[in-house]
Image (cartoon, rainbow, N blue to C red; front, side, top):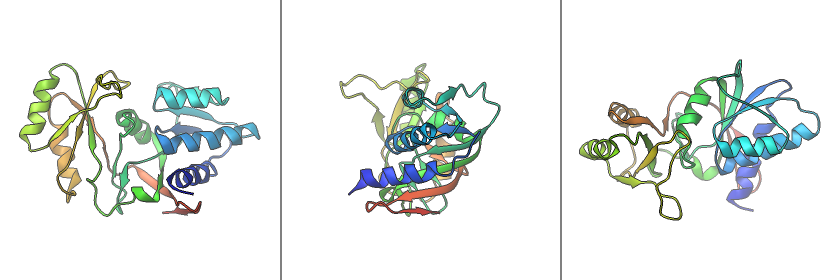
Length: 225
């Protein structure tokens, strides 16, 4: 058993909270994949729900499994969104965006009655900042936007695909991954600094959105926080 088992356990536990008739927001990433798999299995045994996906990959997984996928613009409500996190602290502040979908994930979470966060135990931190912070940036003027970010003292690099090409978000934008030199004491300040730069669409900081947290452990146990 290991990290993958912890992710699977968290995803399966979160699926137990989904009830008949709900509209469920689907996150993106390796832990969300396990949640969607668990939803598909429950659907096969009689769970009738509708879903809203934060990415094409999540939408395709859900659709192939027989789940109905709605466009967020057409959904009358979203009862629960279940998504992972790259880091989460005791105040339920998060860094997200390792999968490159944080802007849509944030919109979906904000549109939901509750966001349930599913993580393996390694994602629980005392302070944010060990993981990179993705910043989504418009292509128009992107070199200038990057210079303004770096002028504030932040260092990082454009995200690339495995073949060396530039990573493009589902919104058609670029991602600049900030690498922090030390753990953060006031991430809200960093977000405020970055979001005010013209050309920055959003950062991977999530504040005030997480409800219940399902933590999976490598031995298959789960804990609700």
